[in-house]
Length: 231
Ligand code: SF4
Image (cartoon, rainbow, N blue to C red):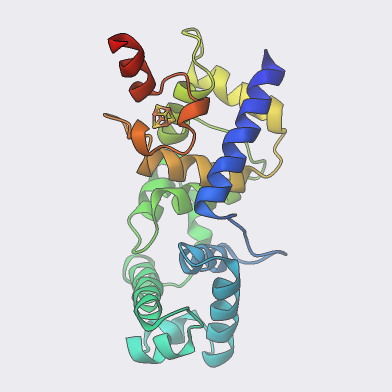
């Protein structure tokens, strides 16, 4: 049974990756803030443009504080985005993150998140401009000394509907089963994809089953259930 679930999750992740693109992180021991800014840049445009834009920002500005005090046209000009509108939007998001950090913490770093409990850390991340729930969840995983699945409500909702449908599966048991399947491997990527899908399609009520990329794999697909009931 566990093998079937694992196989199904792999199929789901492959579909979601095709739909949303492959989420990637900066390699090496990069600061958390750089990881976050990279994910904000990457959202909707892919790794290549995000990589080039991040490198260009690092080259054109002395540090992130200089980006914070620069104008939107200056930041936009350093972007390597596919079009001017995206560059403008990303410039505003990047400066928004930096401005909020400075306003709230008087410093340009995310190191303080390590001292916060998980709920407060996630809330702080989700309050940053351009940081959607799946970016916040990905950074949250990077904060863990030993990454593990947890009770993230969006992720739990999706996997409970699509994979762990037995009544007895508590959030704790689901997390343990996921940890066993993936053994800590690739957690930020898996989190990013599952939370993205849960927050945009597999909503609390109602889930958008007709638009769902994995509806044929999901036993909770409401459209299929309705069609069956009326046939
Ligand atoms: S088919 Fe519906 S319930 Fe299943 S994962 Fe998709 S949106 Fe969620």
